[in-house]
Length: 413
Ligand code: ASP
Ligand code: MG
Image 1 (cartoon, rainbow, N blue to C red):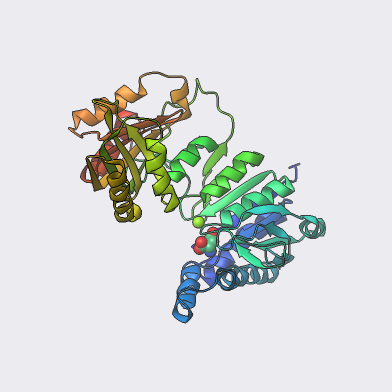
Image 2: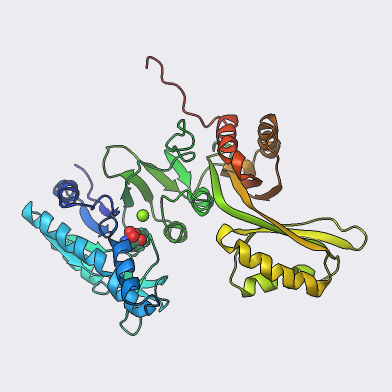
């Protein structure tokens, strides 16, 4: 006999994008419930709905108060929980829907990007005990004063993971429109492969670099509470990708994936005095403007001066240049230059902790294609390079092949 499990499933906007799709989700959930598992289902708003609500708000007040915006945009999910519960009931599967505040998903009060503090799971457990499927609105919670909050775009992933952590679920399954996490974006490399497993650490590096399968915060949350997390397709059967927490590094693949981002720009201050406090000063001015800095490179000093380069999001480029020109003037630096036609490519893998030579393989592969590397940075499980944006796709394809990530051709096909 099969052991009963407690499963938290999350369905994204596309998966609940129409009445037919909601019925299909109900079918899937009801079948799993009928097999004996306890089911908690977290849903997103129907696809496009959150965007529609945001633009509705803008048309009434371009500077809509964050509190009211949350009241508005949390309604998208309220629609889908009700519809899914109705669809389940129609199939004879007992279900109850709840908003975030009804199941006490307590958050801080930063509207639009609230963080979950705790969840009181009593109500959910009570329903599960009565054999009901519990359907919960993703993306939302309630602060200490009873105000509705939202968790940031893509936040339903985090609701699901938090719910799974609170309930100590056997698995948290994120159903989406892709069938798992890939070695890189298949739109750029048609040979990209679905990974059976990826460590949470790698996933975080991949996610923050643009592989937008899961909300980054949900992966952080999953890592903290070691939630067994799986990404699967709503539309095709398959094992998806399991996010893991321990990996035997000697057996891990050298590289799990290639991430990239086109939204990059770099700025350089030349000839700044080579003395204590200068880097702090330059980045201090940038930080005060709330501009995030990614890679930072400072040259070895010569003649008492040095060059200082860093990258920012392309959207912050103009502002960063302006700020730097001011700072440079005050520091008597030689000049400020910049380039917003750059891209970042990274190879990611926990395997590189225990294997040497990854960097040289990477640089050689790029050199063989005559791709010039403008900047390099490394972490324990990632090597990133900045290249001219026009070589980004070629670079990604080249590295994908160089590290053996291409799909093996299947015999007889
Ligand atoms: N509906 C929200 C969004 O579109 C949350 C989510 O789908 O996860 O961002
Ligand atoms: Mg999503």
